Image (tube, rainbow, N blue to C red):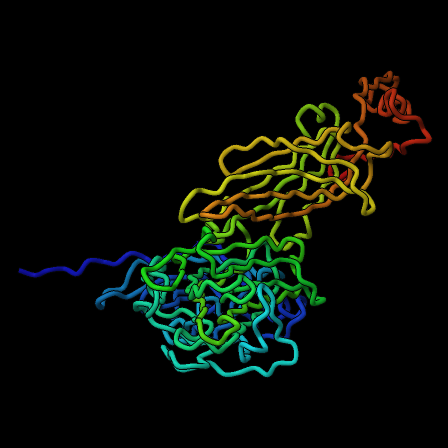
Length: 500
């Protein structure tokens, strides 16, 4: 009896993916070659790549992607090739990241495009802080190294020596390597990983913490700090975990260690979208040179929130995603809605009152009592001054919406450019209550609401169906009773597209 091998499924990955050409990298402030298949997000075994003509691409790791092209990818399992995954690629000027998964297409470990630093813990331990300024970079250690000063090590699947977790995220199909920052054996080091990228809507990655808990003062405990800096070197986002049993993200072992299950972090980077950015992850042993702290990292992602695989961020998440006029204000008005766009600036909109501001909010992961939203508010500022605050949003699942009315702004001139910012305060209690605060911002241009205009009519004296209309006759109706000619200018356009 002959047994026919089963055809394996196609590799996994989005059908539409983005990449950055050398020009896009240059526009973001970097001199780097254009992206190859190494920068796409494809999961599979023994991958084969085909161009749009069906020809095998023999060098996918060095093949420069072409904007607008379609490629096919198959995987071969037990000698049987799968059906293809079809991928359409688009060049864009944001969301640029090299080597997202610490391994090459053919399964070899790679630390390319990452920089690592090491300090004695006496010099480097700065709780929820740390700097690479003035430090000399160091090389990666050998795969699976565990000795002292194993600052940055690519590790293979297998059990962690101090916590009941796998060294590589078991939820990622076909992943053969993860990065460990700091070593698991000594207590003598502070280690840093530095990664530069062109910001998209979000940055995310998978992680697992392992931190010894010697029960020192918090300022002396092992810790992990994640810091994001803009192109000017200014800190714009930070997440920090100190080795404390009361931290809801950590789980106690039967020994002296705390750890986290493999999870993910996602940080909103809309403030710096399209700009050069830098992430520094600092992992430190305790400052008494005895107790270890280290971190596993895998599956880096920079790009659109919708494309990020991180659906349950360990530290929570907040982002405004749309600003638009309420239906009640659109009887005679065309609004210019603002939405989170690929490589767009912050959400910009030109809308009349009332205004709907909507977005996503995700609660942090907790190993005990679930997190709760203590407060979710929206602040309105003009020229740097707070001019209004709105609370009590409508929340449906992980979506929220605020309504801003003219009466919510406490100055007479409520029109023109304003900045809106949302802030959420999550509360957690796994022994000691504490909070996590996340914020986001966007710009909006408030327009006066136009009045509805009665139809204009004129006599067709010539029988041609063509007449002359004086549009300025409608100005008073457009202004309504709230505005005078000194308050607003009325401009006329032939089409709606011309007007917006």
